[in-house]
Amino acid sequence: MTKKRQWIKIISMSIFLLFIGFSTILTFAIEQGTVRKPDENKAGGSRIGLGFLAGYGLFSDSLYSGSMSFGAAFTFGFSRNLAVELGGIYLKGNVDSAPESLSKGKLTTMPLQLSLMGRFPVGRKLTPYVLAGGSYFLNSFTLDRTVIDGWNTVGFTLTEKVDKSFGFHFGGGLEFALGKTLSACIDVRYLLAKSKGSWILKDNKSPLESIGTFSNLKLNSLMLAIGLKYFLK
Image (tube, rainbow, N blue to C red; front, side, top):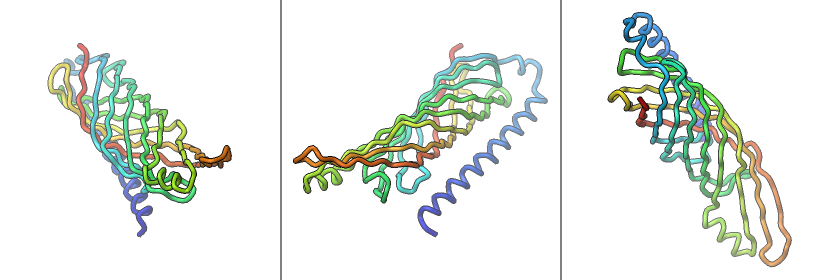
């Protein structure tokens, strides 16, 4: 089995397990909610929160390496069970060169996410949640120094860039209340996006230059993270 096929199998299995896991959590939470005491159902309500996440991000494309990822999110809860989240994630990975794709370098992507979140409190401490929404990817690419020097040696300057793009995401997690205003969480998100790019190869001794484009650059990634969420009273 090739490396690319192994990655496809891993990502497909991750998506399947994510779906099964959160479907189970959702079913369990709803069942618990039907037997919750009346005073527990009155607790909670609309809340405003700020969260910070740190974990590991893994691109689905085998040409891109995974790395540490970070994120922050602002949450506005309409009710005990429904909220909107506005957040952002930072993910950076090394890129191996491939024909008709990016050269060796570093890819940085910062998806800004708008999510609809379903929350399903189980008792007073544990709150499973699921989310889904749209993303706007702020992308940048930096060529490896060896690639730059190699072209300069033969009298050329190469530049490459990755365009911004839209995408989607879904995921979920678990919050555990540490107090009235502070919670710890485990968060899993899968991001789907494609982007385009371009390259320019310029002759250092003349105004001549060659221009080309990339298409179908896959930015799909999986983020596993832990974090803290602070809720205003």
